[in-house]
Image (cartoon, rainbow, N blue to C red; front, side):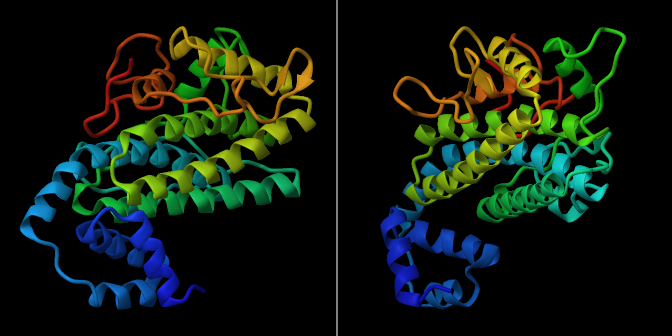
Length: 311
């Protein structure tokens, strides 16, 4: 699709040094640049010892951020895979360092609306590719999938939002309306997570990749919010938004599908900017606790990697 010169210029602009360029080309080639990336890689000079040391020092913090993102992508990819196909990711897509865990719950959603089924299928593909890309970019530094709960965690979240009573249960796999509410719980969090992580990434190549994933997650979120509004589910979505906002601390980092009775498909601050969350705030939501914790909710044994404690 792209000529060799174009790709070379793109990487030159985004990579900080020769070592960055070589590392990214290795992962990008595996993720899709193919022959073009491989050809460029062969013609690049080797990095000096000082460059390698400097790059590795930067990669420590960057890999921690990317591994944090990978934990979130495992959760989203498994959710959509079960919803669309009735099964999760293949085992070869979940191994790595740290304690590996399986997935509890999840099954195919009996979609009634063609557009929602097709949209869900597209998201499932995107999330699968996010996992594949991050794993490739991280290489041997990638973390394994932690234990994921797609069953009791949704019931706890629905109770926290006031959508169900204490004796009731909630599953996003029951029907397409509940599926959309489950997707809404994740998608807005993903956008704010990548926005908040951006300043923590020092490597320009990785930052560009994270920005690309953020854009896709924002497209997903906008479509989910639109579908919820059109189906008359704004009130339920707003309750989920309020619950998320109460979990991540005193700051106001969330907005419902409607605000003051008006449509609000794009949540933004007074400057028209997307909200940000720190890794700790994100973990408050997925652990389903407003307190400092290392596990809970969707991750019963916590996430893998250095960033694993909520705020």
